[in-house]
Image (cartoon, rainbow, N blue to C red; front, side, top):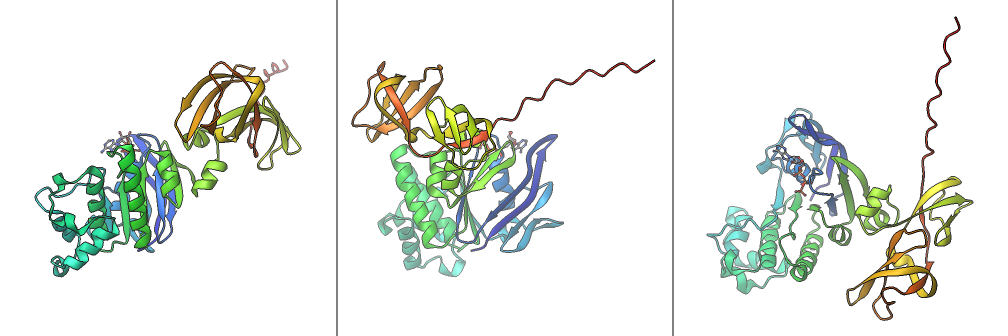
Length: 354
Ligand SMILES: Nc1ncnc2c1ncn2[C@@H]1O[C@H](COP(=O)(O)OP(=O)(O)OP(=O)(O)O)[C@@H](O)[C@H]1O
């Protein structure tokens, strides 16, 4: 397995820039999730890394070797990259074993032990080897697609929204099996997704793409707790955003005085909290507007005295009723984002002296 390094990558279709100056390093044996809204350029980036498309500028290096850019293009089939598309992409006329064997060098294609080993790697019983793809569930098909991609021991595995066609229960199981197989083989992997929970739970680091540029690259915890800006914050989870005035590492806000998570100049700020930081007790303060019960926990929508709506995540056992008044206290620290001062209007120029 090899590290992937993308430097200064740019790509336009016609006059529309799709990727601009993207830098990304995926260390050997780790998984990076490419997370971003629809149309932000995730698939384009993946296709350039795979060698299906050429960049307009920048380079792609695999294991320190330039495979795209700087006047070089190594064809896709020589990059040693395994690809798992959105929906399996299995050969319908081949059995499960035939599909997996397709990924193996010719001399190993009849090696049943090897094929059974690859199926076991992705959590599938060897008894499925003789089935046709249409006799498998969607999750099983995705696992076979991964086994096929891992069979030739690729330098890098690319997964393009591999769980998006699966329903919630199957998605979780399949995601876990895929993560385990990637870890067991020490694979270097890039996973495209627009599902923030999937990105945070699957990857060693998450690259947030926004409008074709890299908004932030960080490990999941840093991304969630210390996002670069409020857009990223809202994209990777639900955000409670309050206005306040910072002074000496604290901020006076509508939810009381909060301790800031990082240094910040005194003055107007917007602060970020996560819904699970809000604790609710009976008493005056906020009005409960709605309660969504999920079993393990619940989301309580609150209206603060200013009219601002915020969400709290709270255990499902002791929930307030819609319309009740609750006192909100905050656990932990708030992440500050200084509000840029509003530029004063330009001073009219004095007329030139006659
Ligand atoms: N071959 C193409 N020709 C012209 N425009 C393209 C082409 N491929 C992609 N685009 C445009 O480039 C932009 C980025 O597309 P891309 O598929 O990379 O986004 P994405 O983040 O993967 O989106 P999604 O999550 O919806 O798959 C989109 O505006 C898309 O319409």
